[in-house]
Length: 242
Image (tube, rainbow, N blue to C red; front, side, top):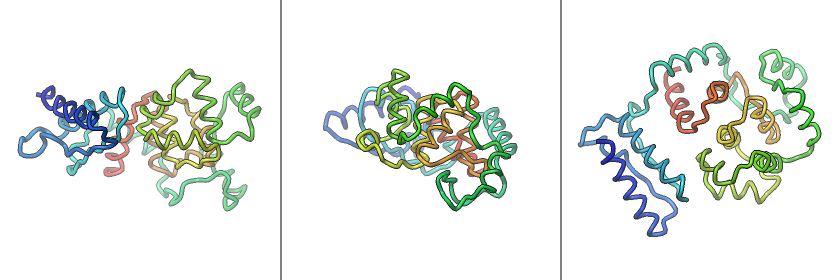
């Protein structure tokens, strides 16, 4: 009875909201002594929490102890693993690429071009961005949000990012986000690959074929699947199995 389980989450979240709580943590309800299949229990929890967060502000933690709860369809698992095998460089680099790092010289950058990890921008998009050289990550991000007619809550909720972090990015034009934050925002804004590369570059990063997370994110962008929960589930599962 997924509806009954979902109502438990919704009721608990409503009480937490009425008490003015800013965060709440749940175990995976129903997956213990009640014997619910863990994948169904997890999907029910995620859907109920996601529905709540569409209209409410709260940090919600879901504590999952059993890796078996995370499940991908056979088709998606095969598609993702095939994509990883094709694109993921076996000798994955220990550190993320920083395009402004002097430690990476011209020879290294030439290798990046051969691997296809530098953005191939449409001409009009590139020209537009050349006109905006000097913008910080924050300035670029919020210009793009305005250009697309999006609101801040739309973006940080789709990205599953805390509102306070997003407010910090908006308030401090020189704020340096973590790479995973930029990727989550790219997913939330449904950016294409060239746009994602461009947004990353304003924060000093780039996508790399030598990074498991980067390749999985590229797979979702190229597949036009912009569900951050699907992305995170896939990252977790493929990192275990690949």
